[in-house]
Length: 176
Image (cartoon, rainbow, N blue to C red; front, side, top):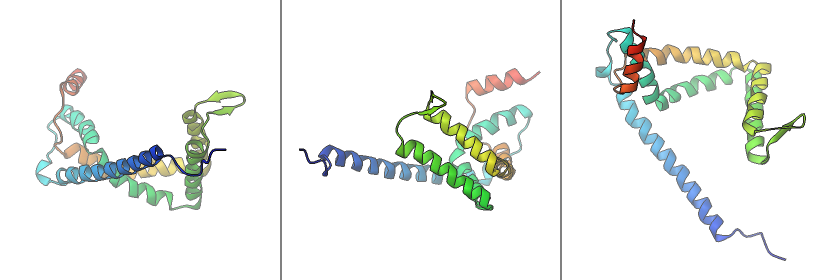
């Protein structure tokens, strides 16, 4: 009988590559956020949009460009909101457990009433139910509202990356 207690050399190399890739991704993400934050806080790059068309170009462009920085601001707001109530904490634990079970422990697709469903669909449906039962939907809307008080003014007033031709064509089609 074969001894399967020791991993194969290929498995050790694959585990090392995965560990190195996570470190490389984290380092790259940290550097990207650091370089974006220099432009994010630069007061010389802020101005009032001249027209609604310019505003319509700025907001989506800044949202795409500064998404990692906005996520760094949104995460603490969401974390504070989720830790503010016992029901929210219970719902967060249920959601984490649900997704960890689906993608970490159970490898196959789910069956609901004999109908096979992809994992993403079944986990999403269960997540919505948990969020509705524990009141997490209200907390999510509150966190989005609080974040929008910071994010929207920045996205509106920051003269961010230049718009491409497709964005300009979309904005021109909206003008009368």
